[in-house]
Image (cartoon, rainbow, N blue to C red; front, side, top):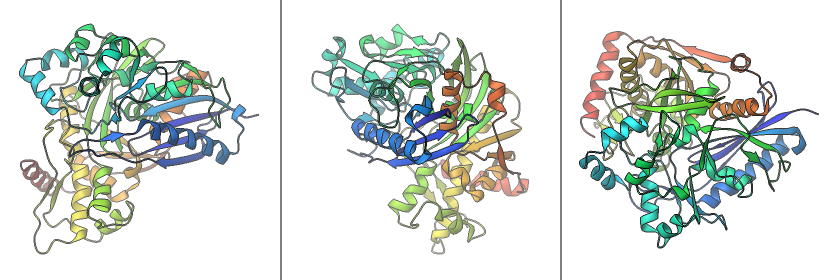
Length: 492
């Protein structure tokens, strides 16, 4: 009888489940999308029941596809879209409101009020984060203020808050366990980054009653046992958990300070391991908890670009210029340049290091000669160019250059985009065989928590590189692209 890990990757547009063996080879991979809800411009919501249905379905299908018995699955790991905010009834499991997604911008006014009240620097020092609608704190506050009776019920302990990791553990354990891990907790604006605990002053600032909060736990330990889920045996331990970007950092085995990765998903997320001491950025990057193992916290610097793969989806669904996301590479490669067209992917505001929540997307430099191919190429360039700003800020904070960048996520399979990234960053890009590194990181953590792996060194040996991309662009050409990019940024 074999021993396998079930890794649940609950993302912004769908849920993916992987079944992996002890050598971290994938035996099955199943994905299921679920609907996005857009009640108003800049509002983004999810139906929690749709997320739970997609999770149950993908677990059952993956177990069958892998050809293993539920008894052979000995550990469950979870990774999730971060900051997305859920509030549900502890007795019935019913959501009191749709989950408010990390991309949602409805609390911009409240954020500005907190800035005007002089709260930003204190919050940054405590949490490592900047004041932005991106994070969970003002989302919780909004639900409690706008759902009739919710604030009173929360104060009585009738409601539970969680990011999606918390919600999934709650449902997987039949409502017996209410926890979140340090990586997700560090994205709420409510956790003291150095202590790894909820902060009483922050709870008061965001008017969040402590009765709704989950317990904060580490990233590779047994949280609870599965109950009543098809494809998994009752009693299977849930023993690994991290927010998607921290899980990807772990999955890329960036265990040493200075090692970094960029994940290209709905957004683009660049994280660098900074060791056991948080680095407070001087360039508007985020300090965040990477993971906590055996009681020791490890931190990361993070730069987030809110829109990456979502820009390709917009080209497909909004403009209808491609029929499938994979078609953008061929279309963009059909022209030698974007012919002066610049795309700034700020459809949900600008993230690091600019932090402009009101920014709108820009397509600039269009002429009568502009074709769909030029627009497609400009979109890929924009996805890559926004990471130059992030990496530059990161290197200035650390005082030393990054030697190489590991990449993952769906869009990292695009060879043209990866070559652009190497050219614009002037750095080597290392792409692993396994691009689902968010799920891989969750599996690694679950394997540690279950005792399948004894050390980080043992896990490091499982990482396998598929291809490297080296910079091939002249410095003059690179500076020309960067100059056009800065002109585009000035127009958001």
